[in-house]
Length: 321
Image (tube, rainbow, N blue to C red; front, top):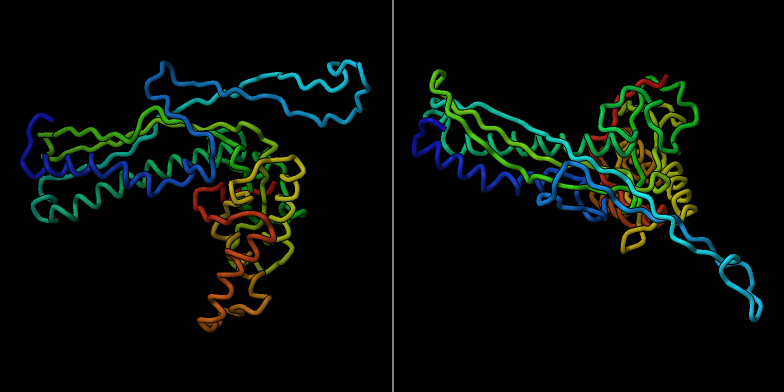
């Protein structure tokens, strides 16, 4: 920066110190309970890494007689392949006037800058990862035809006025790599008497085993009245069953993760209401609310076999045709 004041220097130092903790708090996907395979490639050359993948084994089902060769009957040879993961740059910026520091209060300005920059690049990271997991590309999805994961959602998708996509994933479905941790740069624009702060991060995602993930496509309408168009517990159960059929690994507690949109979260809540929870918008008792929460986090999760996490960064409001 060409010129500076004591306040702006202190602001810059605080933003640099706090950006990563704020970013880590707001970003969802680089989480070992969701993505087991995470890599830091900041010291490497290039922007692409190759992740080794081996073929699945088969059961040694053929009986082996005495003094008979095993190779050729129960071969379990490795056939290694690789998946490419490319990191991309994500950035956000804001301008701070000298007057905002003088009039707005140092702490107010500092909190606004950190929150804006960290949340923006965190949201960009999650959106890129969710899009790639659902379609194989970080590009924004426009139609449910872009989703190439197997769908366990509503069967009559053509009747949807719009669609949201929730995901049910094994921890070994995808991978994440970081090339640059969140970084802040600042420049003083003397002509405008303001300061430009830019935050950047370089990261990326890849699908390691696409058959270890499922999609649940259902209505994007929060107050969807048609039960046949809503997301349902049965759909998520189907996803879990299909993942188990693929021998997709679970987390250490035996669960997959279900990342759901806000609309699908309400659809599931309405289904839980049928077992005695809040109905017709009426406020239930505290005891019943606690029972519903226990049901959702405990019994339902154990019965279905997945942990539910809400995200607003999944593919949403897609065309159905």
